[in-house]
Figure 1: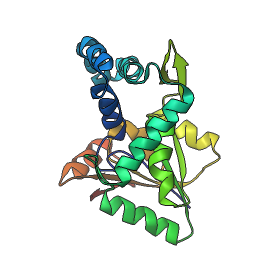
Figure 2 (figure 1 turned 90 degrees about the horizontal axis):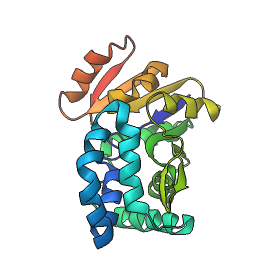
Figure 3 (figure 1 turned 90 degrees about the vertical axis):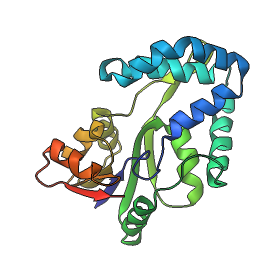
Figure 4 (figure 1 turned 180 degrees about the vertical axis):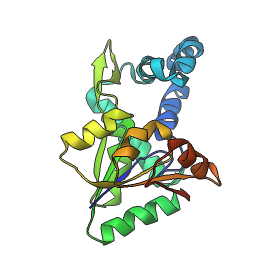
Length: 214
């Protein structure tokens, strides 16, 4: 059996990509200026599903312009070090990590599949020493910065799992943006604070789905 977890909101209690981008922007006056110019356009685009990719590309490029591939990896590694030191405004989500560890203890395969850049997700997850496969958004250079190549969200998450050769699975996520992933899971689980997970489950209409307050 395979257990599939989303990262942000399921295993982490915050948005790793947003925090990473924000830290990069606020520590550079030039990036800060560019962000202030682009944000009024980019942020509404991120909110709307049809323009989300383009809006995210603007924000990602603004935060990474000037970085070589080596610099990009180092930025993610430094960010992950701050996370593991407990100095960032998000942490591991206890119930999510406990559930993940329970699957590992039973000898089951665990995959984290996330819309976050894979270089960032691996930097956050791999130092834990757990045998976890991490799938995420690949990046490509563009005009001196970085943008998404294959954006690992929605149906793309299912494609990433299929490409990696994974079949029947549990699926844990906090968002209905992962509805294709939930529908493809043998045991889909929607997680969230309070009654939020139950409300999402009702909207998802998954006959074999469950909800859990994490």
